[in-house]
Image (tube, rainbow, N blue to C red; front, side):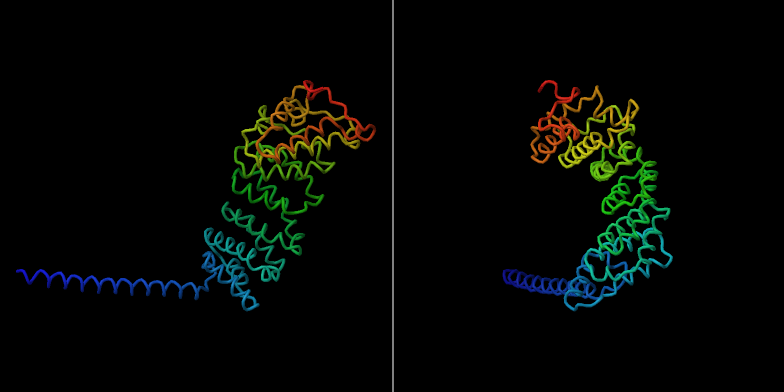
Length: 340
């Protein structure tokens, strides 16, 4: 009995070693299969894998040639696919556009048209991926005019579908494009929807829509439509110091653009009438509490918010026509009475 125990322990050690070697060999074999599968990845939908996308980019850089991946993806998109497959293909195209710049530049306007057609798909996820793909291509100058043709459709989607991801994707695209004048009538029609998105509680879409509105506020033929747009009674909550700094900064830029626009000689030459619930009355009316909000933001923890709040205060105190006639600024009767 005394001799059998050491023999048993020795046999156990041998078995453990064998199992350990087998496990190690199995792990090495599985690793080999995984690497080999990644190297041989050729399927269009496989490019959804970050490993495959990185492989394509590295291959292009090393060999200086077209991998053909974008062309394969567009051919797949032309075929009849279910909604999930279309979304995945569009997502892969978007990644390739960002990573494979030379291949993306060699695409055609027919490719852009094909992506634009996806905006009519019944599935919102396909629409969102198509918007993201158009946004990626909008960084290539030669495609911008073709993508502009879809601006009215994008505005229609944003204004008729209440989906925050779709709003963000569509607004990012619009903010990356110069919007031609022929789009302005559609912009007037969707202005209430844009103002609703601004007053929602989803920060990403709020930031994107206020950037668009700030740009539109510099258009003389759209300024009144923005100022007369109806807003909620609590609109000024957007100027509360508790809001994220990124949103506060953009909202303050918007307020400055509106203040400068309404005080321009061109705009002041006309006597405008605003409804009682308008954005103009919320920001610049006699009963507005904007001044209090601005003074509170002067001591905001984020410096860019402080600076932008001061810019709005200056724009309110110094209308452009007064600044042109006098070197000193005269306080408006409606603002900052406590600091006169």
